[in-house]
Image 1 (cartoon, one colour):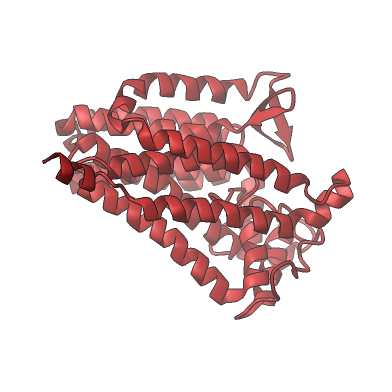
Image 2 (cartoon, rainbow, N blue to C red):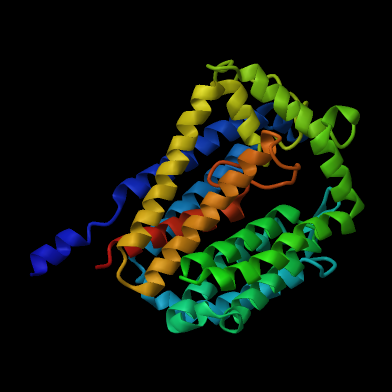
Length: 366
């Protein structure tokens, strides 16, 4: 019996390999996308890559640790995780701690160290929802029973939207709907929840003039080619320039300060330019592999908490990949959102890799 059990607990090693290789590939693409800008701004073409390599090392350590920390113990941290996330989101607005860039205050910093709390909030919320519905499976069937999940999710969305950060707000909102659906709610309850959510999105756009400007730029970017439409136009130029096979690795022209945030939110555009349509399809196949393995792990888990946690963490990754791809291709209005495991930024990288370690740990359970 012990022999059978040990064989069963080998875990989903291909998932870990894919995640690690994607993080390493991200370093290559960050170098390609940022080397010129880094040289001009910081006098070091490896400026962004060095930081990302540190993130990969720390992320790999976090992933390895999460692989062997029994995921069942995480259920005890659902409330501390929520509290930490709320405190961090609140610190964003504290003068001297919150960091403002390009009109948005989305980071907190202590000396040379900085983190983006909204990245942590997504996973804290997924943990809370998983624990809540695992302990109260019957409550998912009624609106009243779902209220704690809705209230917490809306609270997170409000804290994030006033940074302002529309993209992560959308991700948390979609995560909330996805987890309620996967928890087994009935269609009537889900419809009651979905209607206010659908109404809230256009309201959030109307309430802020800059969001209306972005919507206008999305509908006709060439109406303001040097203003709101500039970034989308440059992104489309990059993707169009790549064609079927791409211009070749390190041969992008848009990275020469034509495309803003080429190493972060719009790195997918540089990938499309250098690797072409076929290269992007291979990349999305790898993303699909991670998402498939994540939901496969969830499906095979006999523990309700493990099923929901694996589903939630997989949703966070999948939603963010999808939204980023839709933004850079002009399918939805432009909004800043990093591409998981690829974009420059250590907070997202470390916590994403740690979440994949949790998925592996769940895959080892019976």
